[in-house]
Length: 83
Image (tube, rainbow, N blue to C red):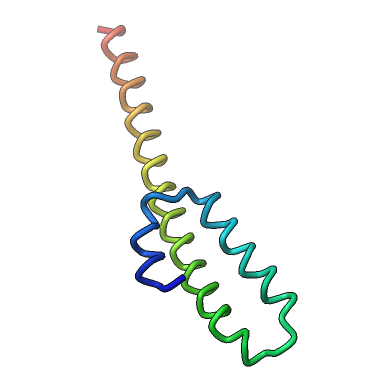
């Protein structure tokens, strides 16, 4: 799982899918006896965590904007009814 591959797949995967990938890496790390073999997996996990965080922030921003739009429309309709 190279960073380039992760970046290419990020848009097609949900946060849940990415979280599952992270959990699989964590499982591998927990069962690895040799720390030398774990370095690459830790690096993958850090990159994946950053990608999940970015996707979560983007989704949060989209939800926030949709909520603001809905509130604006409700207030606009309420004002139109008053006049």
